[in-house]
Length: 65
Image (cartoon, rainbow, N blue to C red; front, side, top):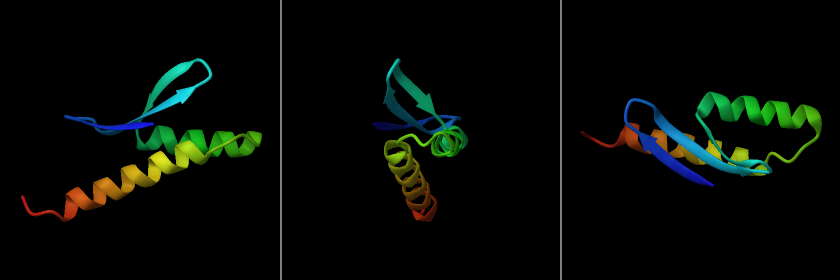
């Protein structure tokens, strides 16, 4: 898993899946987690990525400019 802060896009998470590597924004990760939970599939990596993304967003929002 990787996190990237893209100008104009915000944070993007890179997750490895069966078919390769996929990029997700915050909303995409939330949808992925819900979809996988409904199907009874593993959500740990997506949940960790979302938690890191939220934590970094909060940290950057608190820092003075």
